[in-house]
Every structure is written in structure tokens, then in C-alpha cells.
Image 1 (tube, rainbow, N blue to C red):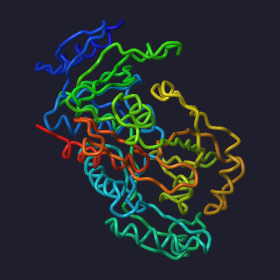
Image 2 (cartoon, one colour):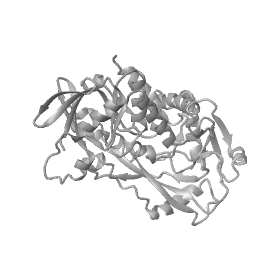
Image 3 (cartoon, rainbow, N blue to C red):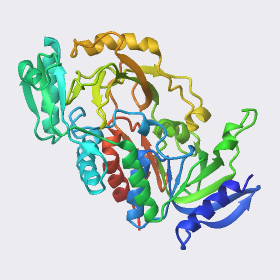
Image 4 (cartoon, rainbow, N blue to C red):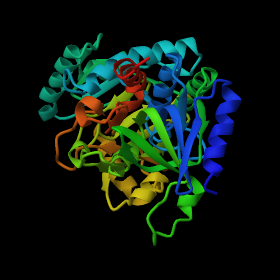
Length: 425
């Protein structure tokens, strides 16, 4: 059992490349220690984009994920929207990576035949008190480099969308939708074609600092699932990478706290927000052609209208703050993703602010996702945190914290930043 994880990694890597970068250097206390080049922790869309970018630059990359396949957490439980870059403070990482990532994403999707559509978005003010906020969003979007924004009177917006009710609207023609699974499948394929190894059902449970480098403690997921909590977690393998990207999403802060030697002041507080989606039923005609978003609310962008590429209408997500999730449950993605039917009654009045013809009984439970936030209830939004040695002092460690929305849109921008800023040939 102690060597099974290691053997599987070595075998899979040797099947991919003849110049294997994993070489056994020692076995201490029955736990084998192995040298590797680059390790990306987490096979969500950001981790996949980072792995692909590093592989394209010639690095030998190993991607570890506790799940049986890629993209099982936040990356597959979101609105699948390509954001333009309007909402985020100017000069923030969210603004920078959203705008750059948006352009990368449209180009990549076109070149690789990823299903997507630039359908545009209307951000709507339904009360007079929201109109100044709408003007602020337009000003911020222009400062962020978002082209084509148009402020509309409600009458003009309602001519575009007859089912819509609003006083004013901001048109964002650069917003769109995509098939996230197809995107991730393409990123995996490209990464593998350039020598990346994927080891699923493999969980990083912690690490320690040795000679100012991070040594990763790795275990098979099934071992973790059978852990009874009576004894401390013990690794089955210790990996010693030159470069580590902690792209573990929801569990990134919890994992970083288990890196013995990483000072706790460099690990931000973590807050988890569950968001439910409901789908529109009992209709054969889609009521909207554009994405429809209300003015942003505390903790999110409000219960908005999202269209998928099959024409299905989804409403969400709402915001429900959750806590009490232990580290191991976080590592294994054992979150509560159920959609409570009672929350449907909270959706109807929110949606009817801009879609008054929504009929009773037309909402059906869809799915739920959880956002890895760095700000909690009634707190101002916090930017992405991308920490390298200049922040925490540990050579080769890159922590990605708080990669919530617009993380999907920003994924390729973040990947470029990581590979360019921290790459050492």
C-alpha cells in the first residue's frame, strides 16, 4: 500500500515520456521520497490551464487530484459564463486576468472548436436607487479595458428583450457562454500531448519544508476515505518538486495550513459560499436571448439568467454561507451539493424584479456549486491571491487562493502569469 501511489505515478509518467523526471532518491521510515519537476495540485480549469502552459514551456508536469477525473468541483458547478471584466476593481488581479483571460478564451475556443457563443449580457437596474450603481459599473468596466459597453434606457433594453422589465440597462456585448467540460477536455489533451502526467484518486494531504523547498505528502484517495481520524494522517509517498502550484480551489487554504513551515500569516481566511441554480421548466420558448444580470449583491453577482448552449434557462446562484467543513472532507470534495427545494421560494421574488411574467411552479432544482471566497458575509470582496516566494519565502511554491468568479474566464490569464513569472528554465 505504501508504494502503490508512487508506483502508479511512475508507471503513468513512463508511459507518457521516455525522459522520466521522477527518480527515486531515498526511502525513509518506509515512505519513499521522489524528485519531480513540476506538480500542479488540482485538476480544475485553472490547474489544467496552468499545467498546459507549463508543459508548453517544456516543463515536465505532474497533476494530482483526489477525484477520479478532472473538473469535478467548482469548475463543473458554475454558470459557464465568459465574463467581460466589468465588476472588478481597476488594477486588481481579477480585472487584469478576466480581461486577458477572456480574450485568450475566445481565441482558444475558436481555434480548438470548443462550443461557445458571444451572446452578450444586460446588467439591469430595476429600482431608481440602483441606477447610480449601474453607471459606476460602466465607468469601472471602461477603466478595466472592456470595449463596447452601452448604457440603455429601460425602453430600449425591453425592446431587445420583451420579457424584461427594468429602468436602465448596461449592455456588455463581450460577455458569452461556453461548454466548460469541452474546454477542460481540450486542456487535458494538450497537456498530455506535451508530456503532462495526470494522477487521479491521489490526494496531497500536507507537506514540509526542507532546504527551503516544499516536500509534498501524498496519499491515495481511498486511504483517506477509510481514515478513522484516530491517528494523524501519514503519507504513502513524499514528492520533492522544483515547482509546486497549489491550485486546489476550495481546499487550497486548508492544504496550505498543512504545509509545515509555511507561516500562517500568509494563509488568508477562507469562506465558502454555496450557490443553488434552478432551471426554467414548462416552456418551449426561451424568454431571453442575452444573459440578464441584476445589480451585484453581497457575496455574489445576484440571481441572474444564464443560458446554456442547448438553450436551457438557469437562474442563480444565490448565496448561502457554509462552515464547519473539516480538512479531509474538503480534500475529498465531500461538500453538500444538494439543492434545497425551500430556497426556490426565495428565487421567485428576486427573478420577478426583472422577469415579472415568471409563472408559479416553473422553477425546478438544477444544481449547486461552492465558491472559494476570501471575504465573508457583509465584507467587501477580496481579490485573487497568487503568492510566490516573494510573499512567503519558500522557493518554488505558488499558492492560488480565492480563485472564485471570474476564475473560469481568468484561467488562461492566470496560467500565463504563473508560467511566465515563476518559470525558471
